[in-house]
Length: 361
Length: 263
Image (cartoon, rainbow over all chains, first blue to last red; front, side, top):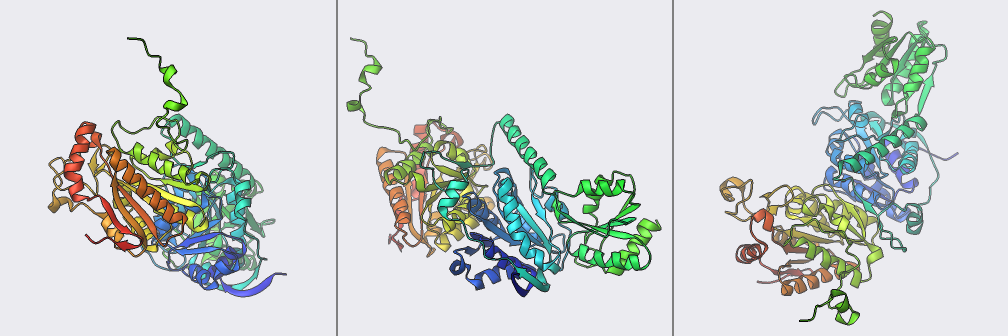
């Protein structure tokens, strides 16, 4: 068993970054995720593993530092919260276009605008439907515990490098701030410069000995070539959709009704299905772990198994519910429930919503 | 008069100039008469002469030189508009022994990228910034740049730059020279053989500062022409530059070895 600690989600994520052998973290403070950079600067990761930590002058600068660093084949990471992630969208689009494997973290807070600093899930569209310009996708992992804040860091890097695609960990103000027991994984070694040069031939870290030079760009002025590049990206996204869907099913086997919820809403909904079952209602929970790729196939299978209705529970006005509806394709009822603007719903509210909107409605 | 066959005079003993192999054979996308090509070549010659071909990463901007990576035959990254110093920071921090430079125009460096420029300079990133200032947005069709002179006509200042309306031209090079993070700040030109020789020495010094890990950033401005944007012949553009640009953007070193030059 690994080392056990009581930690905040943000701290667990920061510790995981050091242990995952990350080479560089570039970030800008914003509530509710400032503990990430505070923890990193206090821990002196440069002495522990050689990891570089730099406070940038803005989120715009952080994401572009990440672009430069990631394009050399090193493991680079940033974290922010909703308004800061909005500022990064330009850079994220370039990174996706240039196929740079980096890891981003969004500890989501209430919006729109400056919003507030309470937990929210209203950045689902921004995360999974683009955010920046152009046809691109981010691999999106949604932790629902402090443990997963730690575990998803190496997983995000593994996926990012496997597909040369940016990956994002989508957390929220509650998961980031709350303290839970976490089992930390063992320190992983950082790759040496020589290993990086040998392994990632696409990376720009100085021409190879044989004279091969590399270019990192998202530009191609010839529309036919750019279309070709886009088709290549789409082919990769298809492959990710086929191979990397992650989800958790709780009490779905005999369920008549399914709640679909991720992150903090999944924790709350887990309690809700328990309360529903105490009332004799057979409810189950499908928790998407990857928001993209979305567990569309799994929802279709549930529809085919005779599920009578789905309730999408998110701390938003109803964003993920659109993907649930696309998967269900009109065959049974799909409704949304969620509190907005940083308000967190209670399990009782979720129970009531399922009873009224799905069973009674 | 006997007919001269050109093949007969291509002999090693007649060779007076050779293109550095760190420039690709691709035809430059710049207008005839533009200074970009010369500035590219000087940087690549310096990198070749310093033996840093395998250790250099360049960052291209958005603007006329957006395709610099097609001409500079080394590892290159293409940044978003204005963000090159942030990319360069990310690279240099993780590869401190590599040579990292950005190549940026005036709109990129002194308008949309002002924040990234000032903070990279102020942190004293051990990189080289080469800044091409032609006082106009060339690629998008000759609009006003932050460095457009007062009274100068562009496609967005058709009656001349009016200070009351459009503000003053920005001497960002003098500005970054004031920051403790810059180690070497100079302003050069590439429109005459003498200027080219001086500019090359300045670029060489900037890269040597980086390789020798001198504390701070080396910043080389090149005041250049834009005959297309200025709507002049190349010769007229160079004359106009000498008469109008140089009196405002004075050539010469501004800061050497971390010390401001007294004027």
